[in-house]
Amino acid sequence: MSDSVVIIDNAGVRIIRMNRPEKKNALTQPMYAAMTRALREAEAGEAIRCVMIAGAPGTFCAGADIAEFLEAAQSGALRPSTVEFLKALAHSRKPLVAAVGGIAVGIGVTMLFHCDHVVAAADATFTTPFLKLALIPEAASSLLAPMRMGYARAFSMLVMGRPLSAAEAKEAGIVNTIVAAAAVDDVALKAAREIAALPAGAVVVSRALMRGRLDEIDRQIDTEVMHFRERLQSDEARAAFAAFLSRKK
Ligand code: COA
Image 1: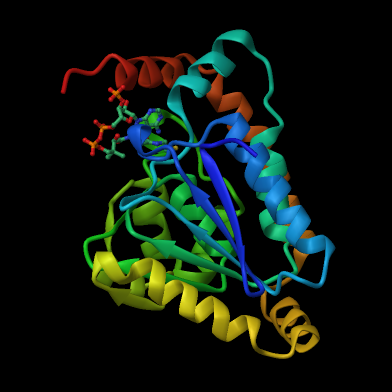
Image 2: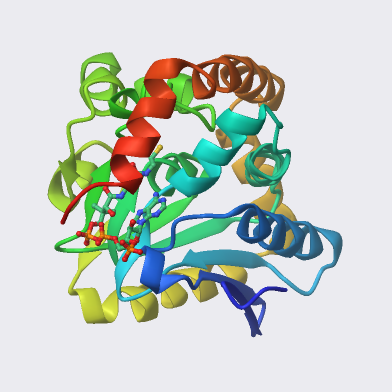
């Protein structure tokens, strides 16, 4: 386990906390790998009945690490950890709760489509600036977002990159509950405990019935990955990554 991801098991709930606040929890390959391991371990036994994904105060996750994007674009090396994380999320049989304490960007938003219950801070924002980076949506969001929020809203968010406020995300069906920032973790943990207290076998079957076809979701992730890798190495994407990394604040 790396320090940038902290795992705590508490009364049937596994908390996976992204912990790289100095970089707004931008996800690196070791972080994806640690989160994947944590999800797979939770899957393996009976002890964990619900998983909660959390961030730092004010920051849920600023998306993938753009410095790693640039490295991958330059070396042409394909990094498997991100895809393994997406698959582990999509294949989780254990229910997933998210505690969104602030900024959510890119995969910080799209991972929420795989969660069953999302608690957000009143000032949280949800942005997917894929196109600004000359990239395309991932994590099966190109399938799940139109289903969840309707095509028009999904296009505005995923393609135009328009941010959603917490209230808009709730209205769009991404968020269940909005609370004060300081209460996000507690309220999410309470919901996770509530789910963990339900009959485990019935929860697993219910959510599998409700989450749609996993083979379709898998195929969408694979197709997105194919295009994403191509886009990642385009000149326009490299220029966008370099511009972000050298920006003046
Ligand atoms: N990848 C790499 N580094 C990132 C990052 C990312 N996705 N998001 C933030 N950081 C880094 C910043 O470069 C900065 O590093 P520095 O202090 O060494 O300069 C640090 O995290 C703090 O970020 P900063 O931009 O100063 O914070 P902010 O509160 O002003 O803005 C964001 C926060 C998330 C709005 C802004 O950082 C941002 O737009 N990040 C990029 C998000 C993105 O495009 N993600 C990929 C989606 S596909």
